[in-house]
Image (cartoon, rainbow, N blue to C red):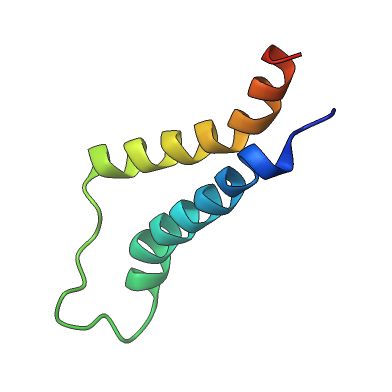
Length: 69
């Protein structure tokens, strides 16, 4: 696919971190016994925005590499 890792290699890592944040604030926080004092779920709009951002960041390197040929 000839993806330029030096330019766009950081985007999948950022996407994974966003997905981990959403997963821990959504599922793991309320399925565990230790909720803590500040255990609030993410608002639905923020949840959707973060998921869409993570998907875009995952698709970013192959699309830009294809367009920059």
